[in-house]
Length: 175
Image (tube, helix red, strand yellow):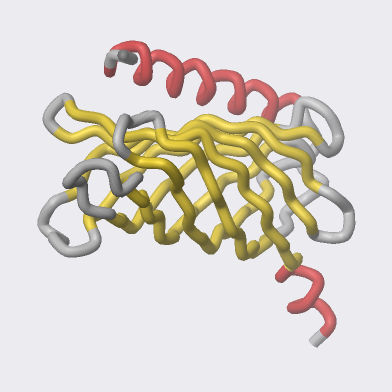
Protein backbone atom coordinates (compact mmCIF):
# COMPACT_ATOMS: atom_id res chain seq x y z
CA UNK A 1 0.00 0.00 0.00
CA UNK A 2 1.39 3.37 -1.00
CA UNK A 3 0.62 6.24 1.36
CA UNK A 4 -0.38 9.74 0.35
CA UNK A 5 2.69 11.39 1.90
CA UNK A 6 4.94 9.31 -0.35
CA UNK A 7 2.91 10.29 -3.42
CA UNK A 8 3.04 13.97 -2.48
CA UNK A 9 6.80 13.87 -1.93
CA UNK A 10 7.37 12.04 -5.23
CA UNK A 11 5.30 14.60 -7.14
CA UNK A 12 7.14 17.48 -5.44
CA UNK A 13 10.53 15.89 -6.26
CA UNK A 14 9.50 15.46 -9.89
CA UNK A 15 8.38 19.10 -9.99
CA UNK A 16 11.77 20.23 -8.67
CA UNK A 17 13.57 18.02 -11.18
CA UNK A 18 11.55 19.29 -14.14
CA UNK A 19 11.96 22.90 -13.05
CA UNK A 20 15.73 22.52 -12.86
CA UNK A 21 15.91 20.68 -16.21
CA UNK A 22 13.68 23.28 -17.90
CA UNK A 23 15.79 26.18 -16.66
CA UNK A 24 19.00 24.45 -17.76
CA UNK A 25 17.80 23.75 -21.32
CA UNK A 26 17.45 26.22 -24.16
CA UNK A 27 13.86 27.02 -25.03
CA UNK A 28 14.14 25.68 -28.57
CA UNK A 29 10.83 23.82 -28.76
CA UNK A 30 7.42 25.30 -28.12
CA UNK A 31 5.48 22.64 -30.00
CA UNK A 32 1.91 21.68 -29.19
CA UNK A 33 1.00 18.07 -29.90
CA UNK A 34 -2.18 16.00 -29.68
CA UNK A 35 -2.18 12.21 -29.52
CA UNK A 36 -4.87 9.55 -29.58
CA UNK A 37 -4.04 6.47 -27.58
CA UNK A 38 -5.30 3.01 -26.73
CA UNK A 39 -4.38 1.30 -23.46
CA UNK A 40 -4.69 -2.20 -22.13
CA UNK A 41 -3.65 -3.28 -18.69
CA UNK A 42 -3.48 -5.80 -15.92
CA UNK A 43 -5.51 -4.82 -12.84
CA UNK A 44 -3.95 -5.05 -9.39
CA UNK A 45 -7.30 -5.74 -7.72
CA UNK A 46 -8.50 -9.31 -7.27
CA UNK A 47 -11.62 -10.18 -9.27
CA UNK A 48 -10.77 -8.25 -12.43
CA UNK A 49 -8.87 -9.74 -15.34
CA UNK A 50 -8.36 -6.97 -17.90
CA UNK A 51 -8.45 -3.20 -18.23
CA UNK A 52 -8.76 -1.29 -21.48
CA UNK A 53 -9.38 2.28 -22.53
CA UNK A 54 -8.57 5.18 -24.77
CA UNK A 55 -7.46 8.75 -24.32
CA UNK A 56 -6.72 12.06 -25.96
CA UNK A 57 -3.55 13.76 -24.72
CA UNK A 58 -2.42 17.33 -25.34
CA UNK A 59 1.28 18.04 -24.90
CA UNK A 60 2.87 21.49 -24.69
CA UNK A 61 6.66 21.61 -24.93
CA UNK A 62 8.37 24.01 -22.52
CA UNK A 63 11.88 23.08 -23.66
CA UNK A 64 13.61 20.30 -25.56
CA UNK A 65 13.31 17.95 -22.59
CA UNK A 66 10.25 19.06 -20.58
CA UNK A 67 6.58 19.10 -21.58
CA UNK A 68 3.26 19.61 -19.84
CA UNK A 69 0.43 17.09 -20.34
CA UNK A 70 -3.37 17.22 -20.25
CA UNK A 71 -5.07 13.83 -20.64
CA UNK A 72 -8.76 12.93 -20.92
CA UNK A 73 -10.03 9.43 -21.65
CA UNK A 74 -12.10 6.43 -20.66
CA UNK A 75 -11.01 3.31 -18.73
CA UNK A 76 -12.99 0.07 -18.25
CA UNK A 77 -12.23 -2.67 -15.69
CA UNK A 78 -13.65 -6.07 -16.73
CA UNK A 79 -14.39 -8.66 -14.03
CA UNK A 80 -13.41 -12.32 -14.32
CA UNK A 81 -16.99 -13.75 -14.11
CA UNK A 82 -16.05 -15.91 -11.07
CA UNK A 83 -17.69 -13.57 -8.59
CA UNK A 84 -20.45 -10.99 -8.40
CA UNK A 85 -18.31 -7.98 -9.24
CA UNK A 86 -19.68 -5.72 -11.93
CA UNK A 87 -17.56 -4.20 -14.67
CA UNK A 88 -16.92 -0.54 -14.03
CA UNK A 89 -15.57 2.38 -15.97
CA UNK A 90 -14.35 5.86 -15.24
CA UNK A 91 -13.27 9.01 -17.04
CA UNK A 92 -9.70 9.97 -16.09
CA UNK A 93 -8.78 13.66 -16.23
CA UNK A 94 -5.07 14.20 -15.55
CA UNK A 95 -2.43 16.96 -15.62
CA UNK A 96 1.20 16.04 -15.71
CA UNK A 97 4.78 16.44 -16.76
CA UNK A 98 6.82 14.58 -19.37
CA UNK A 99 10.61 14.65 -19.01
CA UNK A 100 13.05 13.36 -21.65
CA UNK A 101 16.28 12.27 -19.93
CA UNK A 102 17.37 10.87 -23.33
CA UNK A 103 16.31 12.04 -26.79
CA UNK A 104 13.37 9.61 -27.27
CA UNK A 105 12.99 8.03 -23.81
CA UNK A 106 10.60 9.85 -21.49
CA UNK A 107 9.30 9.68 -17.92
CA UNK A 108 5.83 10.93 -16.99
CA UNK A 109 4.05 11.86 -13.79
CA UNK A 110 0.34 12.67 -13.87
CA UNK A 111 -2.23 13.45 -11.19
CA UNK A 112 -5.93 14.13 -11.50
CA UNK A 113 -9.35 12.71 -10.90
CA UNK A 114 -11.24 9.59 -11.96
CA UNK A 115 -14.96 10.25 -12.46
CA UNK A 116 -17.13 7.14 -12.20
CA UNK A 117 -19.11 6.31 -15.33
CA UNK A 118 -22.58 6.02 -13.80
CA UNK A 119 -22.15 8.24 -10.75
CA UNK A 120 -20.67 11.54 -11.89
CA UNK A 121 -20.79 12.89 -8.33
CA UNK A 122 -18.30 10.21 -7.27
CA UNK A 123 -14.72 10.94 -8.17
CA UNK A 124 -11.44 9.81 -6.74
CA UNK A 125 -7.82 10.91 -6.67
CA UNK A 126 -5.85 9.50 -9.61
CA UNK A 127 -2.09 9.30 -10.02
CA UNK A 128 0.06 7.74 -12.72
CA UNK A 129 3.85 7.48 -13.16
CA UNK A 130 5.15 6.04 -16.41
CA UNK A 131 7.86 5.76 -19.01
CA UNK A 132 7.89 5.42 -22.75
CA UNK A 133 9.51 5.88 -26.12
CA UNK A 134 8.48 8.58 -28.63
CA UNK A 135 9.29 7.85 -32.28
CA UNK A 136 9.92 10.53 -34.94
CA UNK A 137 6.93 9.37 -37.02
CA UNK A 138 4.39 10.19 -34.25
CA UNK A 139 4.17 6.69 -32.75
CA UNK A 140 4.37 6.62 -28.95
CA UNK A 141 4.73 3.47 -26.81
CA UNK A 142 4.43 3.74 -23.05
CA UNK A 143 4.11 1.78 -19.81
CA UNK A 144 2.50 3.17 -16.68
CA UNK A 145 1.10 2.35 -13.29
CA UNK A 146 -2.21 4.08 -12.66
CA UNK A 147 -4.17 4.08 -9.42
CA UNK A 148 -7.36 5.74 -8.24
CA UNK A 149 -8.19 6.06 -4.55
CA UNK A 150 -11.35 7.01 -2.72
CA UNK A 151 -11.73 6.76 1.07
CA UNK A 152 -8.63 4.58 1.36
CA UNK A 153 -9.76 2.04 -1.24
CA UNK A 154 -7.69 1.88 -4.40
CA UNK A 155 -7.92 0.26 -7.78
CA UNK A 156 -4.96 0.26 -10.09
CA UNK A 157 -3.45 -1.16 -13.21
CA UNK A 158 -0.16 -1.77 -14.97
CA UNK A 159 -0.89 -0.57 -18.50
CA UNK A 160 0.61 -0.44 -21.96
CA UNK A 161 -0.32 2.56 -24.15
CA UNK A 162 0.10 2.84 -27.90
CA UNK A 163 -0.64 6.22 -29.40
CA UNK A 164 -0.22 8.30 -32.50
CA UNK A 165 0.43 12.00 -32.20
CA UNK A 166 0.52 14.97 -34.52
CA UNK A 167 2.35 18.26 -34.12
CA UNK A 168 -0.29 21.00 -34.25
CA UNK A 169 2.37 23.70 -34.40
CA UNK A 170 3.56 22.60 -37.85
CA UNK A 171 -0.06 22.37 -39.10
CA UNK A 172 -0.80 25.90 -37.91
CA UNK A 173 2.39 27.33 -39.46
CA UNK A 174 1.50 25.86 -42.88
CA UNK A 175 -1.67 27.95 -43.10
